[in-house]
Image (cartoon, rainbow, N blue to C red; front, side, top):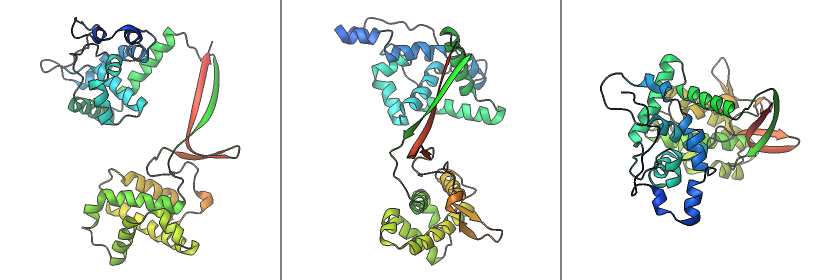
Amino acid sequence: MFKKSDSHSQLDLFSSPTEYFRGSKKKEYLKDGSWHNLFRKEVVMRVDENIFSVLYSEGNGAPNASIRVLVGMMILKEGQGWSDRQLFSECGYNLLTRSALGLMSLEDAEPVPSTYYLFRRNLVEHEKEHGVDLFKECQSRITRDQALEFNVEGKRVRMDSKLVGSNIAWYSRYELIHETLRLFIAEREEHIFKRSLSKEMFSLIESIRGETGNKVVYRSTKEEVDARFLELGKLMYLFINLFKKHDYGQYGTLKAVFEQQYTVSREKVVLPLEKEKVSAKSIQSPHDTDCHYRDKDGNKVKGYSVNITETCD
């Protein structure tokens, strides 16, 4: 059953965190400009919960958890780069995070993990069925309301970009393939060793598991690395076909890296793609698939290109 959140939370003498703060701590906690108060006011309280009413049945039944809080949790998780465990810990024990979400009382219960995951699953299923991203629509309305309140107009636009580096390792092409395979093998180990593969393939798999790519490069000649690069490509192609009906986890990364680094002839022969044809936007590390390669004014960077747009009237 859909139920909108209360606009105001009632506090009592014993449940309000402010009763336990003194001096500068209390002043900072109550300050309008503090991040948690700004986030609650400008983001959480602007969430239009009616957008999500289609996810709930009408009539009797248990009411939903506060949608404002659930949406706020999702935004904080992505914005702060928290794991799910960190998110639930912050919501349960960090007074500033609780305040940011509108959980003003110590007695206010944050959504339990099962409720949070169910909400996210319902969002995904609704988008698959109806082609509507409710979370994106919610964010758009929040941005629209903020733009109207702060008189932000787009009559003048100024844009700049910045390269943000990543601390991922600088992999060679071989090391990238080796590490991608190593992660996939570690994830599917139980299933791989149940397959009917040749002794040569199992030997290759064991060598990938037992030695990192940089060690292989260190002890091998260029000809040996090139030959092994081709062998790893054949193994990747084999895995892609064997597990195409089980495309979860590392499978997507494995397939993407293969398509960016190899080509397959009409005769189903795997060949390395020419270096010049490998896109700068190709995956640079299986540990961070969003990170790309950039060469700007002679500065080589592996990381992210961030575009900053400023609008004014």
